Length: 210
Image 1 (cartoon, rainbow, N blue to C red):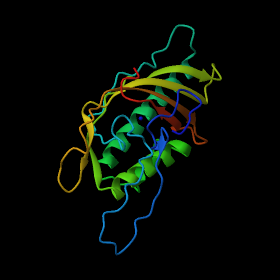
Image 2: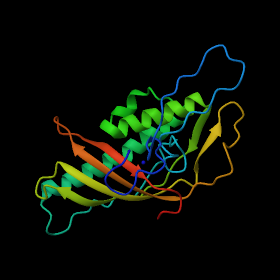
Image 3: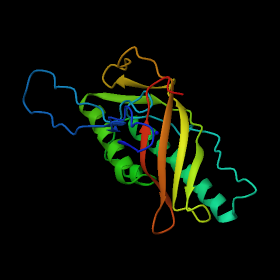
Image 4: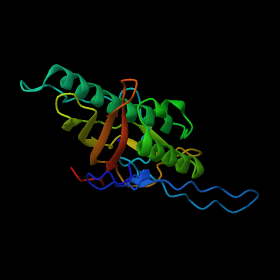
């Protein structure tokens, strides 16, 4: 898994959004000294600021319907969760090269969520960092509005970034010794005009928050 989702604090996303929105700082040209690090907006989104991932990003989805939920609502929940998982998968893939311009980022994300991810990846690119590995996710739907035919769905998750860490692109060394871990994530997915679902915003808490 941006800024302040009115849900739990947008943590480290200085990815966005404080979950960590990343500040797009332009590097100066012709300087012999090292560039000043750019704050990563994804606050190390899941311990790794730009969530690098892999298609192995899998997670049991809990959009399973209950007897009282109508079929259309069940479908909407499943679609929202699928989009949420795909968003992180796209983000992780782009993180392998810190490609903040990857067209895949907008496939399952929009609004603040897309801004936070692109800014976080730009910050990593500027600072010479990439993200390797993939997060493990366990999303569940916590609210669907309106209940019968949802257009907005809230998702809660406890993502594990233990094996999704940042590295210095030139040396392959870990950016630091801070390990990944379990992080609480809250996201909001919205139904788009053409019928698809995209994550509009999300917040990632610090390691150990879940």
